[in-house]
Each structure stands twice: as structure tokens, then as C-alpha cells.
Length: 114
Length: 114
Image (cartoon, each protein chain N blue to C red):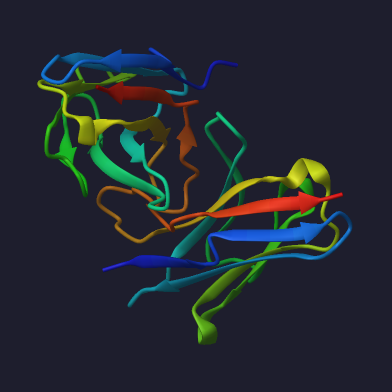
């Protein structure tokens, strides 16, 4: 079975501060890991994904994530938050080679204070 | 640049009514999915399809039916709507050849059952 845990349902940072959103997964096989962003009243947009190539993955809008097998983590970071980063962020894992579907974490809402 | 298109975007139903959500994708993707999103629970897979004419159950299939008569369309039906089905529904699609392929989402359909 696969599962994803996102620590912290709400994270608040000041504009210009570091953004760190935490994601841990449980898996008995190497996972494919994804981060999606959802802006208010919109669908989900892919930020980045890990597919067993480089462990440090760079995505859109200045975000990056590092796959750490020893810690079963895939935390999302951005050096300097911008007001436009305010959104909900979802970590997801894909292991099931049959259905190719994603299993999502419960989401983290990022608030950016001016 | 349509991608994944869902209709309708908003709908209010009375308990016991039926309705169908339509999803269309123009990317020639084999795999299609229906998810529901509820506060604090992330996205949960309702049903999915690995190709034209196929459907399969996801995590929360009860109360829903689906059909994939054409490759580009994936319909989600509610035969007798219940208040517990009030949610935001997302359709998604992917090429599906490998588990690391990106899954693309529609913009969501807001359903309220009163």
C-alpha cells in the first residue's frame, strides 16, 4: 500500500522568507512522487515530479524538492516566498503500475504575509 | 489549448436526483480518472479507465457509475444524489505508459446536493 502524509495543513510565511512544505511517503517499492499546486477555484497544476533520475528536482515558479530515500521524504522548498505563491499544495505518489493513479496527501495551504 | 475540459462547472441537485458530469480530453490520453476533493482529505480516486471501453473502481466508488465509450470522453454519473456527494469533482488524464507520466487535471466541477 502507498500513502502520503503532509505535515501541517496550514503554513504561513512572510514575503521573501523560505517556504518549506513537508511530505513523507510510505512505500515498499521506489515511488514516483509529485507536487501539485491548486490556486483558488482552479484545477491542479503540476509543480514538479521525481521519477528516479536526479534526487533534487527543480520545478516551475522557483520551487524545488529533494527525494530522500533514507527519510522517505520529498519536501518542497522555495528560497523566497512571493505573494502569488499563496495556494494549496498537494504531494502525491504513484506506485500502482496497473492504474497509474495518484494517491494524494491531504494538502497544505500556504499563506504569504506581506 | 483545451487539455481536460469538464462540464458543468457548477450544479445544485436535490437529494435523489441524477446527473452526469462530462469530461473531455484532447491529448489522446489512454488513462482517465475521476477524483473528488473534500476539505482536509486531499483528492480521492472514484473511478478510472485505462482505455476506451474499460472502467475500474478507485478508493471511493460507491454511489457513482462511469462510462468510457469514446477515448476522449469519461462520464461520471450519480444515479441518486446524496448530500454526502457534495464535493468538488476533478477529471484527469494521462498518457499512462509509465507511472511517472504527468497526470493533467481539469478545472473542477462544484456539486452541491441539498
